[in-house]
Image (cartoon, rainbow, N blue to C red; front, side):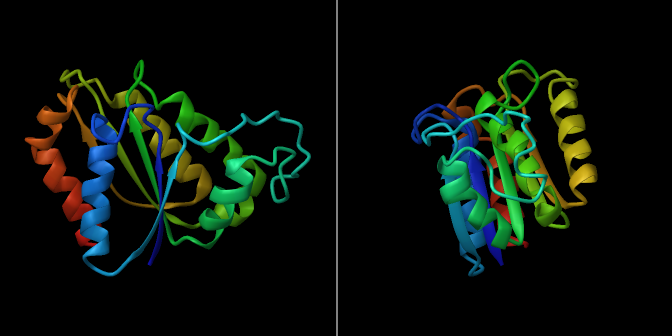
Length: 178
């Protein structure tokens, strides 16, 4: 299976809790021979959708940035898209939202893929991830994706808490069981 993992944490690889979950997922998926492409939305040069409709929902975007040049070609050939985000004010990071908004340029061709959401949050309240879960479920429905799993990791405000949580195993198993 061809898998695209879109990391969106602005934190370093060694400190990011969501990137840690992504790495555990990748380890599990690679152990089964899946092909992985990782895109770091926080480090790449990206531009938000202008809403100009130049693409007509299935054409080239006016922006010739990392999304158009590196990410979109990989997403179009991928079987599975993995969206990875820290929870910021009860939603996905701005870095991931830019990517999601740019799905518009290839809405038709991105339809029907499999998807996974990995997210981390400091808070542990039972409602912490509700808005993000609803956004993800709406995206899955609109894009006609097949949600093959998610990890909404609460109480993971720092790396060691995430490393020692059951969420790390859940992310690994999600990749391993594809």
